[in-house]
Length: 170
Image 1: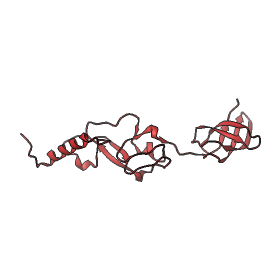
Image 2: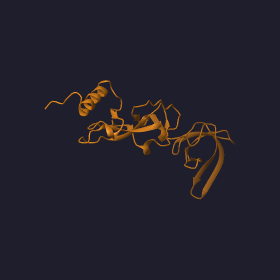
Image 3: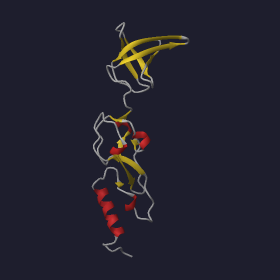
């Protein structure tokens, strides 16, 4: 039986085809209310609702949850859950309505470039500490270069969760 052109289901189908035809980046619908009650619900994802600039922290207020068109799945390598995005920093410009590539976000820096830090060398019962200045920023677990304030030597160390730097024997 043909569907009348004025039926809500027909309008939704035409709208969905138009959105796909013009290349809606996330292939998403604004709310679950737009999905007909007899159709399966698509996967819910988070996308930016405004431009997020490089170096800007990603906040949940800058994201909106959308439901993918039923049968569609997000591409691999895209961050779409709040746990993956909350507190991260954009490496490049993130545009509204587009997926967020995992490669486009990073952890927030724990130590900034030029910051004074404590540097520790620990071997068994021996602990040596020194003051240093970071030569590059880093997040917890990152390997960065530090200048020892006393000797002027440049050394590499690992940023620890408390903001100190751990160095090893070379």
